[in-house]
Length: 276
Image 1: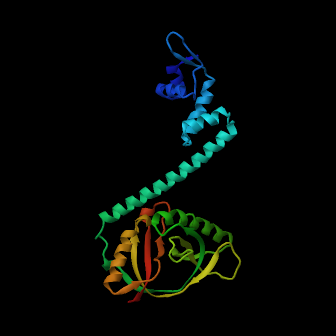
Image 2: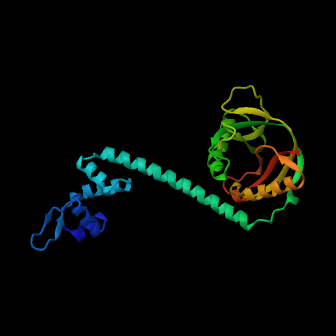
Image 3: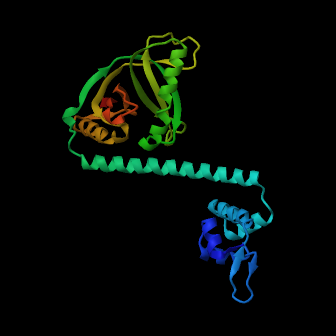
């Protein structure tokens, strides 16, 4: 048998935790010396200890843990519960990581305010385009919601283009529109690339014609799209200063799309405008 200290070390828990588990009847020692009160544990009790710790990590109270382990949850059930909890934690971690990246991007935007000015904006007409596209829905137009939705679309689009023997004829681009209710936050994300292809042909992607835009305020954004807000700020300042009104969402034309190194990306932001 093991002393409480040795058993704690083997089980990678604290002595205090074992004493607490004993006091609430969750994990009793195998034997207690009647003279010294020393607790002793058997190696087989590690099985119960491991289940207790695992269930605790699932967020259960010790009272709930005791009910479950006393009912002898089998390995398969426990494995399923742990896998579900692992998926939940991974999703939360991914969301927190994206949120942190968004905060850092906002901080960098604040630090660089004023470096990009309205003088960088060019007003021009956008020609009609024929594009192959895939679409998905993002929870909102915020960069932290858009990025994880749009990034997988381009590799998949190019895979399908290759299967259909359709070659791109120009750069990739993205555009957006509201999804569902007009006042809702969700947006439809369009990931496209210019092509010279028959829109009527049956393929695993859509071919659509984007109409010409008579007037668009445009600006070249250098760097990752996670930091696009600073360029949009300059674009908004120019639109307001020159008496225009923005129409819809900005289109993104990826002049140099660098998936492996987004910091090297070059994107033209194109926002349709009309006179007030």
